[in-house]
Image (cartoon, rainbow, N blue to C red):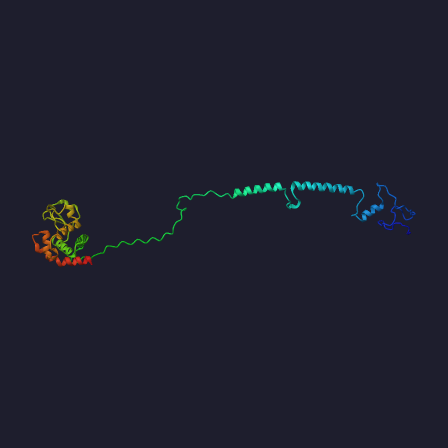
Length: 289
């Protein structure tokens, strides 16, 4: 191959591309301009060798296309917001409106609620810590007093009723012994009804006598003004009726038991009360101890 400027490499840049090896090279002026419709082989080959180089005829198209794209992006960003989700600066008027709406909504949410009056229910009122209630004291059981001095239960219960009535009156112990001894002589400490007074049998009793209209523990007679049949059949009333008369006798505390009892009862056997003094004393001591 001759060194006459012929292209050994089809992509070389040193000579003309439209000659063959046996065609004489023709020197063409470098300042000649090829028609625009047919770019030279050099231009085409140069574009292949450097694809990033600017190509004739496409520069204007690229500029126009870039301008259109930029305008489209600007318009799109104004409608939908910044690309990529990054917040952009909003207009001052829009920011002011949003601040006003947010402030109004916050003020509505934070309104002070109206005061609620607590309902008058046991759960709404505070309850104070209640102290434990003391256990109720057990009622004292009545003391069981065994019969003494040869008495049975009914006789002992009647003796206790006499002592109880005397203590309610506040009389001294001596008066209690006189009253119990008198009831031992008159009724043997049984609550008697009278066969002469059928009414007396309507009340609690333990025996029936026939000594006129005499009834009760002290054999007192309604006809003598001691009280009604119903009153005299009550051991409490009969005892207090006896003691009321006894305490009115002058010097009864210093009298012999039989004399004091006779001053009240006016019995046909005045000396009979003395025989019961020791037994009456034992019974009263057992009840009061």
